[in-house]
Image 1: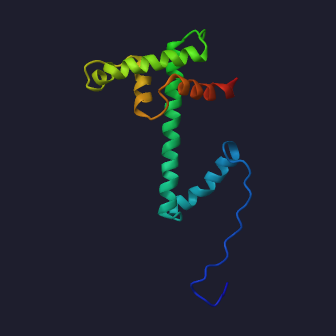
Image 2 (image 1 turned 90 degrees about the vertical axis):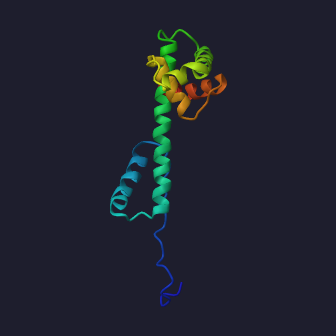
Image 3 (image 1 turned 45 degrees about the vertical axis):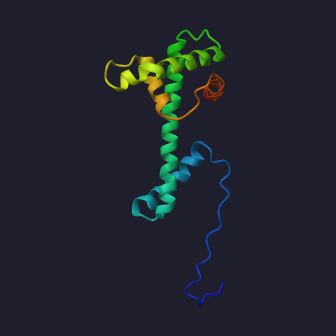
Length: 146
């Protein structure tokens, strides 16, 4: 690097090894360090747009996961069914509702039931619809709490 050349950039700080940042306090602290720069416009728009899109995606996924768990609870309130049977019931319920009920509810012809409110979210936020994929998604959501 030639320090007399005005086009040369100063050396960048080395990237610190942040370890696993998938979740928890390490990720929260890293995000908190970005907040002042975001508030003052210190983050380039190209990075801000990507960050915003990632946050939007996470929020949609959280809403979908909550709806998926609530729909599973509505279909098996006693918790007696296997996860596979709940997935089968949910797949069937989604197919039936999307076939006719969804359009009627969306058109305002009738209010949705509690289960249908959750299914509306599952229809409108892209995600698994077949029983195998629903099973895998439910298993990932339920396994950490066990």
